[in-house]
Length: 415
Image (tube, rainbow, N blue to C red; front, side):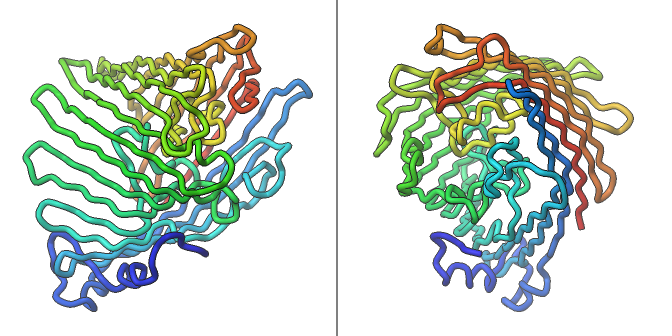
């Protein structure tokens, strides 16, 4: 196991110091004895079928993620946290991103054991500081997320500050030195060294909340393609509610920066509403990641599974967009019945610009899930079916879209 960009002294401190706002421990040893350990087991069956020109290409995997963590009690404002993950594969055959089975469908859950989180925290003055490897999410995960859907989640090595000293105002800053990606330590792209600054400020009004952000990404890694992450993104997000309608409006602009091989300026736009009509919630939305002749808007730190459908056809090596840009019009219907939550979703995709053949149809996706929790247990069944539509070849990294069906059955147990 390796831990990039974290000094040994900090790792030792994470295991030797502790805190919560209660500051209940009277000594370092008591901080350990009053700490809490938790174990999570997540078993998943995933199957993929791709309807290629040569016939159906199928893959499946049964994986288990075992997660054990420990958080010390608080001592003079300090606390420590450490979390270990192990991913095992029991049966099935698929491309897990590192096993060399590139002819089979991708199920990006490589086996391995690693440190998922280890950090030293401090709370005081309505502020929380964290230094080390940590989970980091901002807003709806569109720009910064932890990709919790995959068995090996994405975490960040760095320093974060969260402040709420001013009433109704929340300030967040993060400096990221390394991204621990979902592909694991055995992959050449499992880590991305960075010198990235993230700023996020949110203020709550009577009618909703306003967020402004600046995400300044710079890759310090010379691996091919990582310099494409060098971008400056500035945006604003409004979340409001009126009557039975909750809505989100967001706009961001992005420019290439640093050593980015592209030279471009592109926009991001989101408009969505969720209408509560008991017992249903009906959601409608439209999202655009635009492109110009020199480049396209990217979100390489996002939880991409949450966006543009669940079959992940538009990941484009983790950039989250293709060279022509993507428009996503979507409709969801969700509710709760017999103690189970459920949702059905439909997406219609088109490119922001026509491709080289003059086409813009990126196809559509239909999917749904049903989930239930009881005590320490939870289970979910999810399905998604993507239809490629009239236009399959697009320019983004040689992307070719094919009809895809995916099925997941997931069980969780928490101790």
